[in-house]
Image 1 (spheres, rainbow, N blue to C red):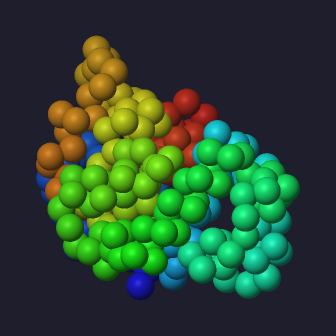
Image 2: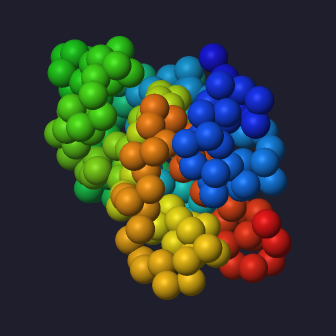
Length: 213
């Protein structure tokens, strides 16, 4: 179910009260939405395919993969194709090994998507990073955008760090890089929502000065 957040929802009110500086950004940007994926497995396949590629190239390969499979991406349908067939649509051997490892772990139940929705963040990330080719950042993005978890923080995300430095640097011009972690505790249990607003600040041009808060 899509989570809709704005200044009058419980999430928006909590973030505004716990962090008035972030609250200014929330008021300016307005509504945001967080929608979980209907197919977490397919989302992870897409994450692996997209690594180190432009959005355009990744989109082409995903479309080729969908055409090759002839329907929904499932562990069974992907494991039914050998490495050379998958290589022919543009996947690297490293990504093929990652996707096959993901598929096997999904079928065996070793990767438990229901558990990933409720486990503590560190445990969920640890489970995901057991899959070849899935690192901590990819795992965190999956928890936020594919599972729709509202309280995940990605300290390693360069965009979030840059946006936090801009936001809090407006009041403290000497705010150093890496300040994200110093403010994030006040956002819990809605750290993902705070991150979405910081990303939107970049997308909407506030961070680079194209728009004024």
